[in-house]
Image (cartoon, rainbow, N blue to C red; front, side, top):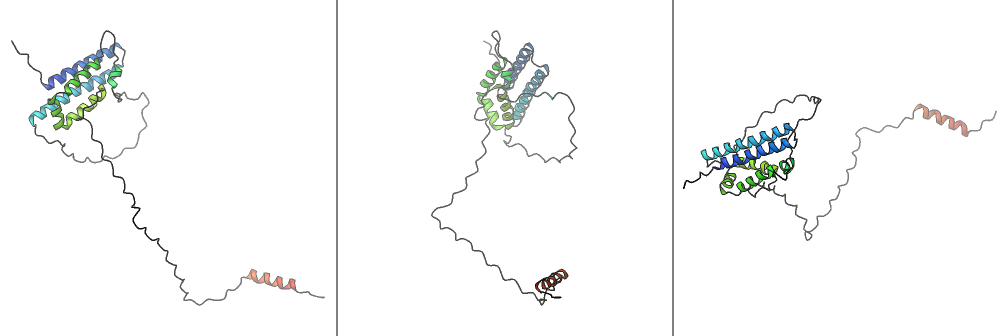
Length: 225
């Protein structure tokens, strides 16, 4: 008996994604899906195949690579150009971002199963293999590849792919009710104003005050003619 050759991890992954790409494009063309959107989906799936092959080849060449990525050099901040008004026309087409978006774009039929569901089953079975889990554990690039793939196919990522939650900041310690209360702070009295070194001069009333005083004197006297 001749033994059937077992496919490598890269070949199995590429076969699953290629079948997913071909089925999605065929089913999307039949349902009248936007051709530009189908081209974006095909380009994304093709790049996923190429990225995974590059990750596996680098891992085989250097299996003892560090888990932390190399530090990047800070890029110089480019000069900010003045904002331009957007050109009139339709907005650029982008891929969806909600959970299981590829499953919703290609609905199943009675005679033909859901193409995205078939790819989803293949990726789920591949994520159960220890070889792939070990690759993800020692290579962060593999995790960055499989997270969006699981998201588009509606797969709940395994614990190895889940991002760690940020640590919570500890709550401030409440004041101790048994501790003695601090005495209230007393305000210091203001210092008395310093005496002026210049002698005070009597205030000379202005001319309109003198005129008013003269009329008051005339009004209080009784003149007889």
